[in-house]
Length: 210
Image (tube, rainbow, N blue to C red; front, side):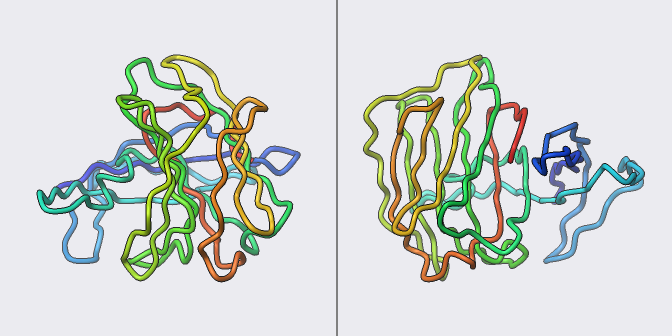
């Protein structure tokens, strides 16, 4: 099976935030759990200021009887980074970007054990443009929990800039967009420090992740 993957290069800015620089499409063959880069893969040399964040492979599997993880999470990964030491109260994640001109969806995912094959999800926040929804959920031991979807308004518009902030509080994640509160998500993960990965995917162009 052939899969399209992206190799992402990010530059560490002086204030410690990661600003997306560019991505390089790469074609791979996938066999069991092994990934082989084809000779046409483009490698970019390291410098002191450039850091390779992650190489992620996303296949697309459909099942008529249930929604798969790929149905929930857009397959085009824009960013993947590690959260050093895990999440903790008062920590804030800032995501800035531009919505595509013809968007379907995008998702922001906080992961536990991001290097594992079956990743627990502390928070999946999926923005759907067709039904104008912002759905939140979590997954543990391979089982998705109950979805939450209540929002006071749908703030995203095709082609517009946005600034999303996810503030970790003692009992919940508080999500604001352009300074206005959008939604909350009560913690379902037993230990916040287990949340060590951030994944952004879908129909947006990132300008900053911090």
